[in-house]
Length: 102
Length: 425
Image 1 (cartoon, rainbow over the protein chains, first blue to last red):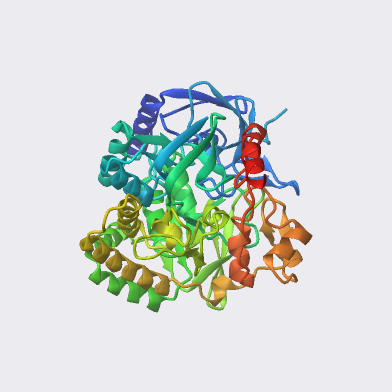
Image 2 (image 1 turned 60 degrees about the vertical axis):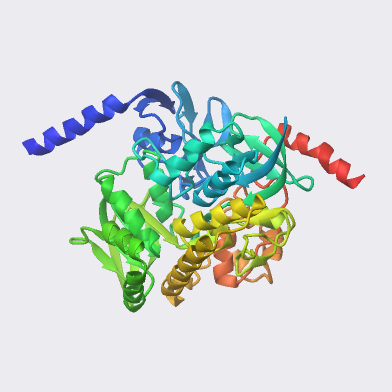
């Protein structure tokens, strides 16, 4: 148990040290390493969550991971329709999903 | 903004980088365009914890420092309004016209993603898709992951997921055990691939590796909670947080089709110099047939030399032949079997963009009719996902795309208009 705690603390310390920039996802601030994609930051902030609502009202999340399926589209700094999987986080970036509490 | 180049390369994966690198060394003015923010394509994808591989570092390093090279990252091809020119849009909103003497298509491949019940649930990704997301920094530590589909990409996804701390519950391969074993033995003829395979599969103990099996259904409320795997006559339920599945790769043909290049067996047709059927257009890498990074690299080098007007060293041609034989073995071993090709239930969504179930589409004669009547394939992905699936179930080939090839801003499209008019007049 001790080993495990120590290991996970070490892992967190390492993650914090690598958090070079901050982004805000649906109002929640997360620190991320340089070159982290917005899709990755979404998972850090929300776990396996949704990025958009389909025409039939279903929750959707990043799927193809490589800019094809368009499921991961979000609003970045007020600009709609940005693909989270192909966008790298910039410091101070504000990201909104269609599931954002309003 | 207008720019003019000797050679424009579309795609900055192994093939595109190799092509650009060779042309650059011959003193050509080269531009390389890629929709991702950083070069590398899928296999050499860089991320916060993923460094560039040595060949990639050498080539992209040369491109970054050379005076005669322009890297257009996070940039998509929107249209090809006139011959020997492309309209591009970058993520920062910049629209550009680029013209070229020679064009090299290195547009790569995407995953073949086949629908099953529940495949739209958050937590379902492609197999290569999961790899790409993890390389982008997505945490999966402690998550229970099922990897499914077919081909060596599953092993690569397994290696990436495990290295990132995921608890991979099972790898579900549709190919029968005999095929997988035959392929494994044939690797002996290809030593570097053998080394790669042994590294990828290290630590198989404690992991279920099921051949001749397919995921039939994904279950969960609002996200993945379990998957149903068909093993022979039996259904087995596996609890998990993620399903990463993909049924091999399909060449990206949008731009080639728009430029009216001939297509053969689902890939861009090229001659021994990597020349397409259209003048001044060359193609290399997986858009000309699935074969892996090594084959893509050598094809890219050949295309870069040929497009620069230089003879091709026979050694390069021999290397290409060797990797093409490997690709043929791969294709044979992991051909989609009956279970993988079985059409899902009628209420399963085929088109994720427009939420069109497969039952609504099945009765039509061809892809065009199905699109016009059901809106299937008419959403923002423009049928890149459901079109590849429809090809498997119904044998329908996609129609040539219309611009914009990707969702684009109105300002960019307005820039295409004068050029279009010039051609009509």
